[in-house]
Length: 195
Length: 244
Image (tube, rainbow over all chains, first blue to last red; front, side, top):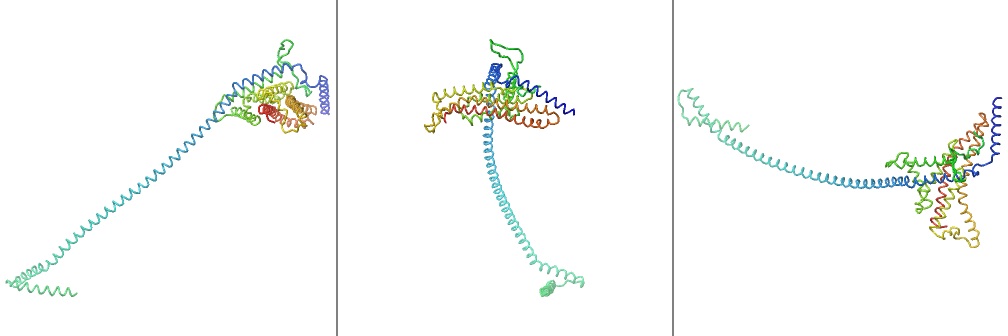
């Protein structure tokens, strides 16, 4: 109930105000009272706006934009240059690496050859030394071999002489003793050879 | 609050009465909003122009995007010959845009909803464009009214139509902006009035409609400023590059 009354009051007031203002006459836009004033202030405000914008603000904005464009172009250029430089550097680097690799290979080969040759040289020398040593030793052995029977003979005959002297107490003819010993030795060597 | 939807367009004096002779040049609410719009434009773009970062911040980006937007609009419609008129069209676009946008604030005043304001702007553009056309082409500018490739029989009729359409340019330009602004604001006011009269029971429907209308009106405010500027560019194009 209350709401409806309120609504009615609102509606009524709305209608009366609308009617009153409608009586005053339609569009305020067509009332020429302030036309001149509006034209005057429009000219002043728009004129000031235009002057300040065109003289001070817009040139600065366009300068900023131009500067940015130039800066970007410059940056792109330098970036391009640096890219080229780095590519060049990379190539150089590769070349250097290749060269040094080759050099290292050469050095290694040379070193190996040197070492190899030295090793062979030393080996040969060693072999020679060994050979000569062996030959010397062999000679000595052969000499010893050759001289040993005589010595053994003399020693044996001496010993036999001594033994006989002790046993019998008289000297025996040395030549007969040595002949005997020789004969015995020959028998011994024959038997050892026969084995 | 006055319920008359036309009440918002009333112009009234603010401060003392200024009279030169019989002419009333008093400072009004319309003048106030012209000053506010101009100052807002100057402050925003001055702030944007003062910064010189390579990577722009928000306010700088705003002014630079507006700059490129208007400059692209001009070069697209009127070509490179229109470069000298850039600052004028930029100021025009921004002035109309800011006046429209400030008009969207409740209880504010919409400068562009007054036919006299839009008509003065349009008349200035019309006269300026005509003068530029005659300076650039002499009397050859009159060829604008004689389209090529029209049969000779139809020519008198076409020329008359062309002249009428040319002369009606300032009227169409000004009435378009004024009518759009006035109609939108009146409609919003009417729906606002419905909200009050229907009260808490039935007021929700016009209220929601009013909210939707506000969005639409903001779009219209931008669009009408854009149309105003682009039509100026097109007229300028006619004057600079005479071909039909």
